[in-house]
Length: 317
Image 1: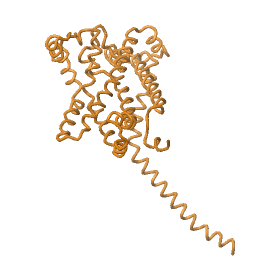
Image 2 (image 1 turned 30 degrees about the vertical axis):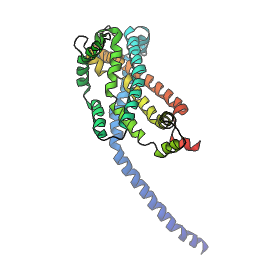
Image 3 (image 1 turned 90 degrees about the horizontal axis):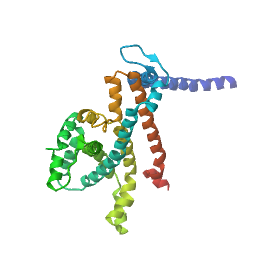
Image 4 (image 1 turned 180 degrees about the vertical axis):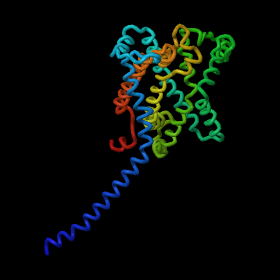
């Protein structure tokens, strides 16, 4: 009887276990069913091309002939025999080093202005965001006119106040600064992200600081800036990745000139791949750019612990 009783007690638990197993399997099936389109898309349109480009980077492939395996020759030639590769890498690094910090500072300052409670502020927020949604081609054509040495608006303003007028896009010394100045045109989207972060700062922190007699600058430096470091970090990473891939402006405005002063990395990659049909060579350049961005991103993530403050971490301290 005892054994029969034990078996009888196990039957309901076994039935419940089987029901839970069926429920888990059913949920797993529908989970895989709904995520399958994304997985298929990732495999076909992202992972597959990445693997193919890695293989092509080890070949001599000119589209019209089958790929020919050459090992690491493309990478060796890039670093040892290609002057324009090093120049394009220098031009791009120069652009990133100046455009990213300037863009973050300018966008942060703009978001502070847009965070002021005034009537009609939504209008100004829209106005400053609009350039971010404008076509890159249209923006490039507009700035070609603005940078024109003879009748451009920028030189007209400089001339009217007695300052020297650079050659901008036709002067190798001023071509890269011109692109850096132009990059500030599209900080509206970054400013919107900063603005969202500013509006998430707890008002209680400012009220407590005011009670303690903190000045405007002290409140900004000791409350606003630390609370905004996660947003600054995000914009730094995204800005760096985007700036390393600058292409449209130089392709339309200068085609890499004058004297290759604006030959940025992706523009040179484009020339190798689609003008000279050296797809294997271009694939090697793409992988070098990917590795550079990956390393810099990992370094930033590593350094983030030293200056990025999250609210949860601050509570633990």
